[in-house]
Length: 280
Figure (cartoon, rainbow, N blue to C red):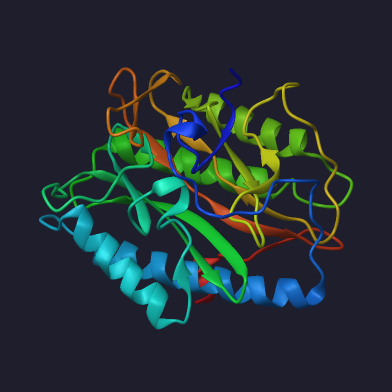
């Protein structure tokens, strides 16, 4: 089985879960000016929530408390959480701690501790369109140098990929830039999960991969495409394991993992980061 799944699709057969109504994937969709204007708003909501989450996370909080805050803020801004109910996912955020890679489910009995590396991924559905983004937060003041280095490498890799976004370039240009930067640190890109197009569906074509591959179409970038670019970087092996909850993915060697994601528009001469937290 091809294991290159979009980032919020669990590694299990679709017939095992009741799927929500969603449009069938088709060709890459080019957004018009009206659609882009709405997506700027949905993405701004996501950016605002993640900026606030990054400021409030502290030792002693439960992961469910973070989810409750994020959902409340998404709804206060007139949107609905993109993730809640998607393929049966129970919460508004994915929150993955330390060696958890993606899809961590918020829990009332899971507390955040000093020095934890916490990934928070969320989306907002506003007037028919989604925004999607992820941050990694080092909790408290006692972050180990190894954790800081991994987070730095992952965030830099995201921006190295974004720098390749312009008409005429392709997905392989993004993937190569991400992969080369991650490898320069001696880390590993997780290959089972990819980025994706974003729009009326949370996951649209194309799959935005973070490593050089011929297994997925190498799409040429055109103005009006909107992409979720999201490298996932492990300090140890790239291999992962899905836990019994069928959602939470961990590194097979229990090494740390970091992830960053932005929703990015391909413009006439480059790119626009729609989920830029510096603009909210």
